[in-house]
Figure 1: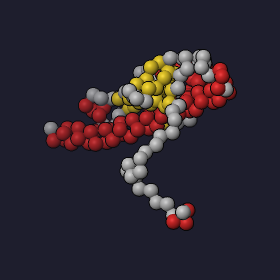
Figure 2 (figure 1 turned 60 degrees about the vertical axis):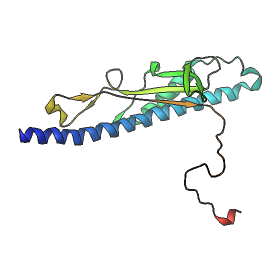
Figure 3 (figure 1 turned 180 degrees about the horizontal axis):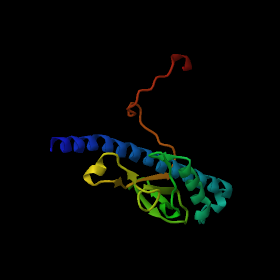
Figure 4 (figure 1 turned 30 degrees about the vertical axis):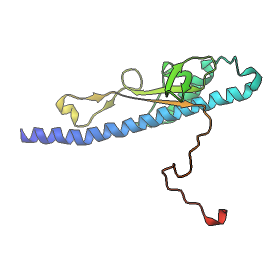
Length: 169
């Protein structure tokens, strides 16, 4: 019983660490895909010009391949991540309410879900947790990137250390 308890604790330490690291990698994939999709959306607006942006309806076939290509350039648990077309949603981000609504009419954001589960790329395989009947763990991560204006902050509100040489002044 002591050996079984030691194996169970080892599985928690090793496998949970592996799952959390893979979850972070999957989040990076979703972030990269959403940013690439939003960048492509921005270039579409750039090509239209101010007069024709009001009635713009986005064609998803211009955004989805960019997101999918970005996904395959990244890995989670050592595997390149494919992103399903259905996991790329184009829509509008409301920065006031912090909500996303799917729409192709005048979109300003792209939402991407990256999977390592039964729907895409297969779940990750555990090392020691197989002993306690947990052979795989499904994971998913979601990200939204939006075309928004520049952010500003009041003086002394930004809580990051920033050093600027006196020579710049």
